[in-house]
Amino acid sequence: MRNWQRTLRPASYRGVSFYVDYDDLSGGKRLALHEYAGGRQTVVEELGLRTSAFDVTLYHLGDAADAQALALRAAMQADGPGFLVLPMDGGMLATAENFRRSRGKDRNGYVGFDVTFIPSSNDVGTVVSIGDVTATVAAGLAAAAAQFARFL
Image (cartoon, rainbow, N blue to C red):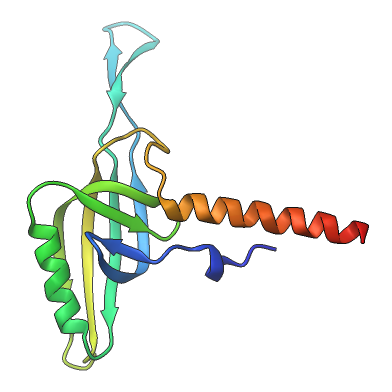
């Protein structure tokens, strides 16, 4: 059985780390539906891919949460795309489209954000991080070692 805690990557944007509570990927195709008067069939015309978006609920926790939140805000407001790493999706270039920070008087040491990241490319699997390669190699070595152990 997979050990999820060991295979998930640490999350960050432009080198500023954070914890992910929830992330949601939206995407799809842009379609033109042609419906004709008196017709009984719709002609579907594909117009390409819809722009993908990652909606991420993230947070900082601890004594330095306020400083980390300021660093993340600066990173998200910097010009151009930055390198985004999400625990399950790996690394990609993305732009922070918008964000909302939240904190509460009874939750000192916790600063949360809701952020929408727009990847620089809609192509799946175009960016492979060193973490992706390392995890794949490690998994392959572990499987090979288990097979060799059966023969000893």
